[in-house]
Structure formats: structure tokens, C-alpha cells
Image (cartoon, rainbow, N blue to C red):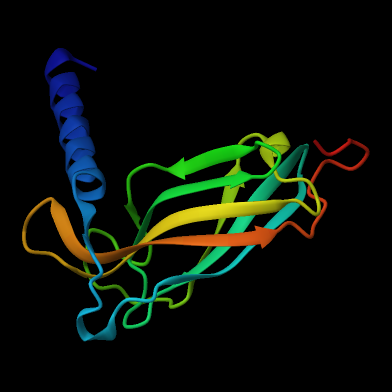
Length: 176
């Protein structure tokens, strides 16, 4: 490949990457804390359960979480953390990310409640069977794109306390 073709190809690749990054990563949900305007508060964690299983050669552990909001489908979640009474904790999300839609645009497959499986990187941070755990997450809905990178949404910080009823540790290992 001669130098001119290389420069043109390289430039096109860089432009493609920049266009993708701008679309996918430069806009973000910005929460306007719910003040019960039009009875819209009341987001909740419907369910949070731990599961474990094999994926080819690896033992994987997930937290399955279902969230809902009263007046609209959840469009983003953020600030997602768990901890348990045994001292385990993990933070999946610091900043919010869109779930049902991308950058505040409407989409075809809106779900309320919204469910997702979140992979726990270290399965030994999982609460042992019978242990109590807490989940904190922010839910965003009614997002409106006003042309800014920060998409304005109603939001609510919610908490869930549950008990792990599943043994999600690798078979043959002891729970911590």
C-alpha cells in the first residue's frame, strides 16, 4: 500500500471511531431528582437475585436486578453498588448509562420493569447463601434530549435489602 492510500485509510478509520465515540459516549443521563411532580416518584427495585453457573471453562456469578418506575420505562441506571453483612462489596457503575434507549432517543423495545444480569468480576465477593445484602442504584426516566450532552431525566436513588437464597459459589468450594 502506498503512502497516500495509507493516509486516506487511516483518516477514514479515525473519523469513523470519532463519530462512534461521540454518539455512544459523549452524551449521558443527568438526573433531576424526583420531586413527585405529577406523582412520578416511586421507582423501585422489584427483584435482586444472585445466580451462578458455568460458561465453558469459567464459573460466573451474576446479580439479576429488575427496576421499575411509576410513570415511564427506565431509560438509564447509574451509581450501582452492593454490599453484604460479610464485608463483600462491588460497584458496577459510577456514572449512569442508558439502558432502554441510547442518548435519550426513543426506541422500539422499551421495558418497564427493566431487567439485566450484571456479572460480578470476582465470584468470591458474592454474599454467601443466607447472607443479607444491600443494593443501591439510581434509576432515570422521562429523559428529554435538549441538544446538550447532558440529557435531562427524572431520577431517583433507590435501595433494596434482600437475602441470598442461592449457593452461587463454585461447586466443591467453601463460601466465604
